[in-house]
Amino acid sequence: MNKAGQTQTHPAGSRIYSAGKPGQAWRVVSGAVRLDRSGPGVEPMFANLAVEGDIIGAETLLFQRYTFDATALADCVLSPWPEGGGAPAGESLLAVLTASETRAADVVALRCGQALERVKRLIALLGPRPDAPALPSRRDMADITALTTETVSRCISALRRTGMLPPDGQRRGRPQLSHQP
Image (cartoon, rainbow, N blue to C red; front, side):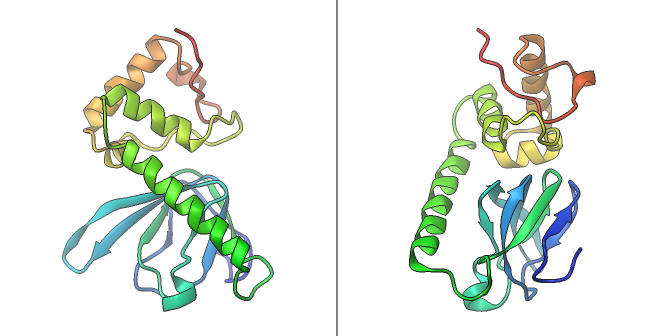
């Protein structure tokens, strides 16, 4: 991890910060971040997802400590927020709050409906950019979509069979869902 106030890079699977620790807010420049609620004697539980452009750790502006554990789902680049230091301007803060509410609605939708549709929505939410990292682990995808790892695996296999995802050996970047019938 780099010093506070500087851009940070985190490989997939690495802890970005832990609940209860002091820190600062970050903008996700690239990648995806999993946020989990945790506590003493409590198993971590998926709480939210942050993707490119989202802000994580904004609670530190008020409470000086993180509320969630943050883990890189994909290789991430984070930059300090607010940019340029100091408190965010009203319009900037409003944009962040609106994006946060939209992301929360997107995450709730990932936990409802048919299994295949949930997995497809997660892949789409993570961003259909060919230069983006590969999919998160089946376990992370299962936690996020409230499915079992076996069900996620079957969905990924079905998407590969239908050509909506490239074959497993061709994962040079995050798979894109094609819009083939």
